[in-house]
Length: 139
Image 1: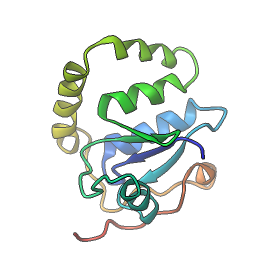
Image 2: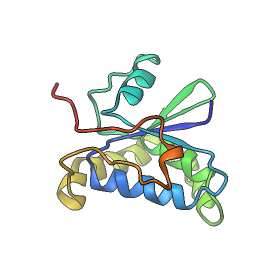
Image 3: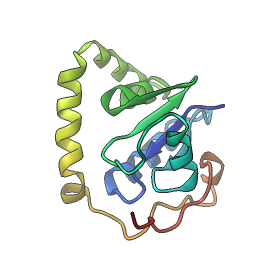
Image 4: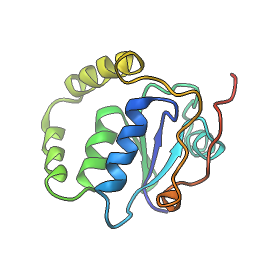
């Protein structure tokens, strides 16, 4: 299975990040699933991760799950030049990288907005999504 990025489908920053990845992934290496979608929930549940926590991005790749800054850097590694160079930041201790990640995650809705419904793929990028998603489900 291709690597799958599981993201918060109602977060403005997260949706912009998906658009960023799609434009810089000419090989179509990554697939996407909103955390609020059935596919996203199932993918995380199969790996013992609670899908109600939408504060992080996950990368499911080769049977393992990366989260937070590690997921972001592993995604960058799969993009074209110059973005794959960001992977060098993996040398920064994880606790420092994740502290910055957590700070942005705590403020993302205030800074980048929140959508009423999950990000829907356009006709052109539909092939990158495991399934189409609708409005988030009530918990």
